[in-house]
Amino acid sequence: EVLDPGSKGVLGLFGGKDAKVRVTLEDDPGDDAVAFLKPIFQKLHVNPTHKIEKRDGTLWISFSGTGLGAIIGRRGETLDALQYLTNLAVNRQFEEKTRIILDVEGYRQSREETLTHLAKKMADKVRRTGKDVMLEPMSPHERRVIHIALQDEKGVRTFSLGEEPYRKVVIKKSYYKDEDK
Image 1 (cartoon, rainbow, N blue to C red):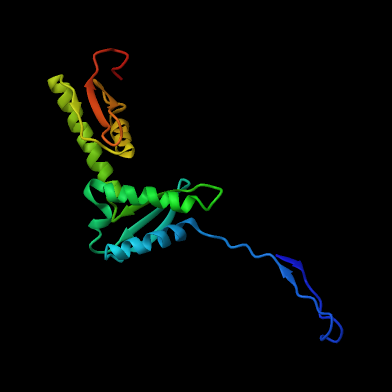
Image 2 (image 1 turned 90 degrees about the vertical axis):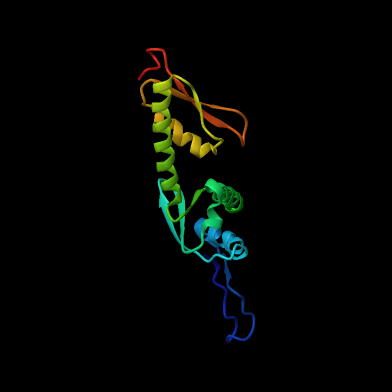
């Protein structure tokens, strides 16, 4: 933005005035996230390619390549931690917050499918035996997947129990008509 165009002065030699401009640097949260992760990936000795896309107001950054298991970690714990840190690092510099989801080779969707299958299987077990089933500790996102998968299932209900990071989903038989959807 030109604030003052300046002037050449007398004969272009005397009394000239410099122009004044305002420059605004437009940062991209996706590029900032990738820049934040790059040194971490170097320490892990991985060099993934990435694809950035906007889905429903959320920024999805998908990584692909070889040897990316170190980025995912045990049941996605490392990926969740990297996602949390990336959101903190990137969003502290912008007024408008952007939710960033990191994914590696479609791991997020695959994990959701696995959790949904597990939820249905455990709901069947609860209906068959009448005994509650307590699942392993999960992240808030994973617990939400279980709750959503079973919200319309007849004869069972779900709730979370415990304190973070050991919070678990309990699947319980539903005995009441108003709970039986």
